[in-house]
Picture 1 (cartoon, rainbow, N blue to C red):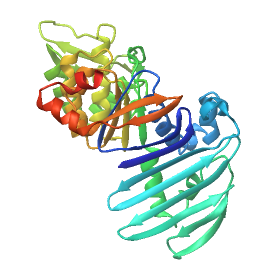
Picture 2 (cartoon, rainbow, N blue to C red; picture 1 turned 135 degrees about the vertical axis):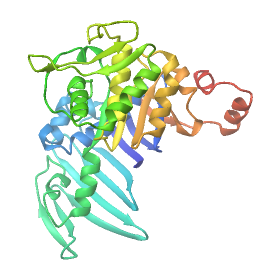
Picture 3 (cartoon, rainbow, N blue to C red; picture 1 turned 120 degrees about the vertical axis):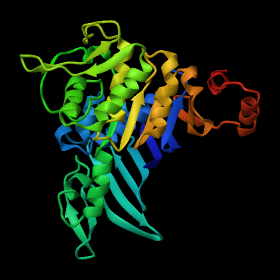
Length: 364
């Protein structure tokens, strides 16, 4: 589980640190930097996936280094550091880079009372801990791809591989209903894409695998969306599939043309949270969009009970009403810099004792 993120010079995160729990709700006005926090995590995860290009391909996708670095000052370097616990192991990963190359990178492991550097280096050169020889070995790699992406291929670095697989499987979602209103070729897809792409294929895959997850998704959907009786994943003669539901009082099903934006977005959240291939960290951007406030309680409770770590951003006070204060992180901005606001615990406790809803309190 990710417990801490520290960033320097990434977009508005000029000098920013935040601690996380298993469930986290980021609130704040527009343009305070909530999305930049999620994007920083996504940047880190995508940099670990060779199929998505090297680290600087991720920079290019964000408009280039001058769009990514705080203040557009290309002479500054960007630093990202995270602390994460996997079982009894606590990892600290640090990476810094500038416009054209990775400058420094380090991964350390704290196991019980012992702390060990798994690898560290500068300008593509350094040393790693060989777990078979129990010795330090030198490496020399390039400066455009994180060293961890090379070390993962060595059989002598199983602890590094464990952390790499964890980090690579972080996911970010901001669902767009139009991306789910499609009939798609039947193809095995095990996870929903960030905009909701492949939702129909994912549901069909879960159904074809006879996974209990399909029944769980259907149960939540039929118990929360009024008059919905069944979740369908039809197989057409041309070997396509799509999202559909059967409603009470109607003989024919409602397909993706007829389903509301809110139903599609709610279903996409369920397809992520009940997926057998659950990401190691899930980031949801404004899950309240298109969804009726009466469903916020269900959505929050599902996130709390999820078998993975969840971070969401929201502008909806009614959603925050269902969140305990310890899960909330208030994000503000001063002089272009994203800041973490401290809540007055005494005032907060007093207000809650007076039955003022948390969402209303934070809105005020």
